[in-house]
Image 1: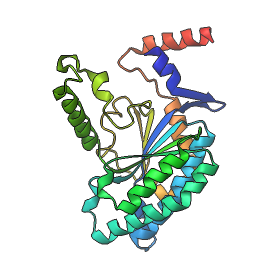
Image 2: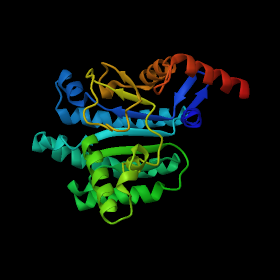
Image 3: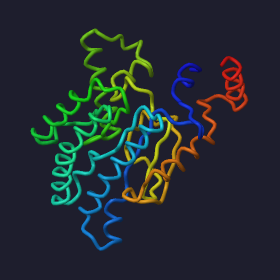
Image 4: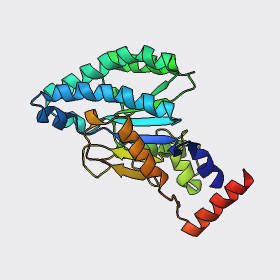
Length: 261
């Protein structure tokens, strides 16, 4: 646990930087409505914010940025808006692949791709392959994703392996189950940010957010900027992450780490 905790964070001149940041990008529609614009204008502006925040995270040493782009529940939105979002997803991905490559960033998608067009699925796979060997920020896009879906898919995979005799049911525990989840190979998020004023996680990474620090802001996603991100990081740096231990135990570990440095 000590090694995992020590390796999950980075430090810079301004303090502790989370290794993995997860964001629900909320408020595009309200941003547009306040300006008497169609909701589509808010989504376009929100796409620009993604580029800005990804660049800022990369520059500050964040290793993984996971963005909730389209939930499994978003299909319930008006058909016209869903159609626009799919077109925006496709056009933005086409435009950003080269930019990601030039900036040494990797791209990964999580979620049920079967709900997307074949054209979009193909482009998603091509983008992942093209950027796979890059060594900078890993940008994870959760699309047609839900935390309950993630857990259900993991349970199905584990059940199939158990029936096939590849897994001993009596040996199944937290770590065994975790291997079947999306992003099982990455550290769990250190910091969760939600814009738009809502204070809930809305079926996003339910398993992975168990010990994540939560930060909520009233800012709408298109207005979210580098200063906003730094405010969230500063807030995160003040948190004492105990993972079930006492504050005294954590302080003792930090002292030991400093002395061993």
